[in-house]
Length: 243
Image (cartoon, rainbow, N blue to C red):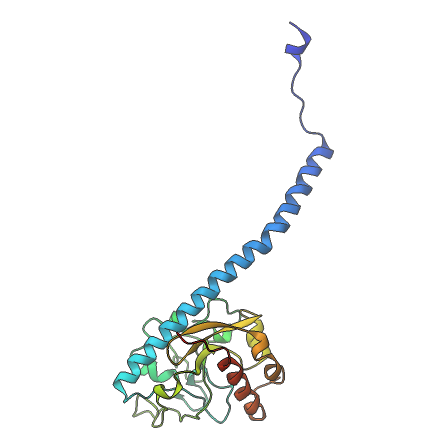
C-alpha cells in the first residue's frame, strides 16, 4: 500500500487547541455586550407597552369617576408616588384605587421588566401580591405617578381617594414614568434614561440628562427633596413631542 494511503490524519496539537479556545473566548466577549443590548432594547419596548396599558387603565377609571384619577403622592413625600398600599396606615392609596375597582387584574403591566429592585418588582417577598395580604408591608407599583397633588389614603369604607385631580389637566405633561425617587431607582433598571407617558397617551424614551441634575440631589426619601422631584418632572415635560 502506498505510503500516502497509509498515512493517518493527525489530531490537533495542544497549542492549536489553546488558540481555538482563545479565539472562541474573544468572539464570546464581543457577542455578549451585543446580546445584552438587544435584551435591554426588548425590555425597554415592553416597558413602554406597559405604560400605555397603565394609561388605558386610568382612562377607564376616569370614565367612571367624573374624569378624575388617583394621580399624585402621599404623606407629604413626593417620592412616595408609586404606592398601592400603606403598611403604616393599613390603607390603600394611589394605585390602590385602581386595585379596589378591579383595574389591576393584569398586575404585571404595572411593573418594569428591566427592574432589579425587589421592592418594586411583582410578587416578591419585599412586595407581595396581592397588596395588603400582609397588613404591615407596603405595596408598591413599578411605575411612578406625577407628584403634583398630595392624595389622602383611601378610607376602609371607600374605594377611591376623596380628592383626585382631573386627567384632562395633564394633556401635554408627563403623568407616569419609571421610578425617579432616587438615583438608585434609575440605576436598577434602564440606567441611562427612563420611559415616560404623557397625558395625551403618547409615550417616549427620556435620556437621563433631561433630569439627572435634580435627581442626583435626592440621596434619600425626604420631604426636603420635594422641589427636586418637581424639577425632575419638569425636565421630563420638556421632552414632550405629542402624538
